[in-house]
Length: 84
Image 1 (tube, rainbow, N blue to C red):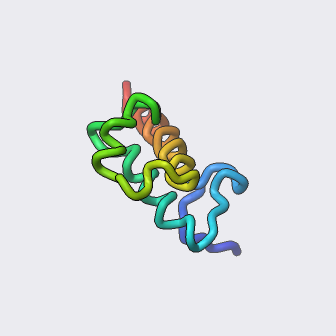
Image 2: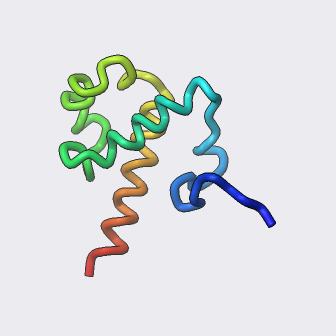
Image 3: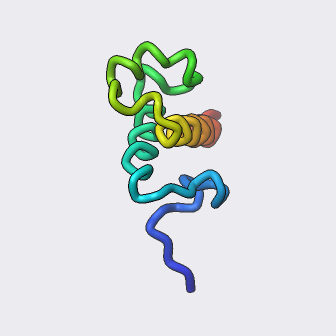
């Protein structure tokens, strides 16, 4: 039996979830940023001003952007699950 520390619905495809130990904090920060009330449902470009202010050290990093994109996908899935 395979045991995973991350739910499969959070990671999605393995390729999109690969991070190094250096990238993981930025990826997680991006994912969490995507779930903030000010950014939920907004593209990276639409949320950029907020992200620049709230995450000045990480918002430009690729790992942050990947995490943000995955967080938005996760958010949309949650909305679909609870609408209705």
